Structure formats: C-alpha cells, structure tokens
Length: 200
Image (cartoon, rainbow, N blue to C red):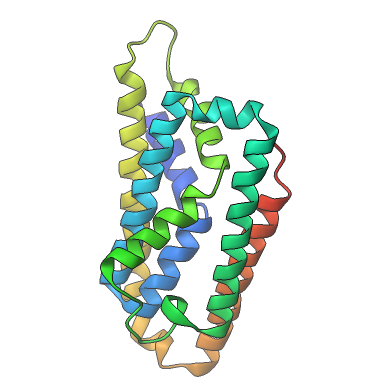
C-alpha cells in the first residue's frame, strides 16, 4: 500500500459528503458516542460497496441505466427526508443535546444513507485500479479496499473528536444552533440535488 494511495484516500475521505455531514450532525446531537456509531455505519457500508465493486455490481450499475436511476432516486428521496427532519429537528436528526436514538438505529441510518448512493461502487471501480499494477495478485485489491475502509473510519472519528471537543460551547448558543440546523439541512438537500443530477 503506497503512500500515494494513502494520501489520495485521505483526501477523498476528508472531503465533505453524505457520511461526513451525517457523522457531524450525530456528534452534535448525541456526543462522541453517537458520532463514532455514525462513523461506524458509514464505514461498514464503504466496505459493502467495496465488495460489491469487486463482485461486479459497479459494472452492472454502470451499464444498466434503469438500475442506476432506481438506486439514485431512492438515495435522493432519503437525503431530502434527512434534510427535512434536520430542519424540523425531529426524531433522531435533532441537533441539540438530546438522545439521537439507539446504537443500532444510528448505525443503520449511516448504512442506509450511503447504501443508496450508487456513485460509491462506481468510485471504487474508477479509483482502485489506478493503484493496481498489471499482473498484481487479487489480494492487492482487497488490501487497498481494506486500507480505504480503515482510512474512512479514522478520518470520520477525527471529525467526531474535533466537533465533540467544542460541542458544549456550540450547543449553548441558540443562534449558532439555528444556523447549524439550517446548514446541515441545506447540506443534505444539496447532496440530494447533486446526486439527482448525476448521470449513469
């Protein structure tokens, strides 16, 4: 596993996306434990997408426009629901000092959010082969996939630690909380819009 791969994986993981927004919102709402659970859910689905890519699902999504569109718009609908729930401060998407839900529910929501993103398996097909020299054993693909999965978890937990350290000060300021709620809702809606415009 080359330093170039690890650096590229880190840049990809640290870039704000669905998983980062969800992890940050859970950390603000439920503290470090909820944030780590959210990071775990997002990481688990990253591993699932990696396996799907290796099994050829990404190729199916790439060649089947109908399947791509079905998965894509299910993801768009879920993201828009997350935006609405965050804006309304309802259920497990409340961004205040409240219990965000059971551990299983937090993890499952993180899995579902990223599972309905058809770009992830396509990403693995486009990303991983760049670091696999011709004639390499199949085990190298698994090694790189596991490395990327580990990088995802470590990066997301880094976000959790960063936000958790200032959580109390943020939660005590109603104006900041109102703007954060709007920002997270806008982020989910924006990610949904971007996914809706994605072409197969």
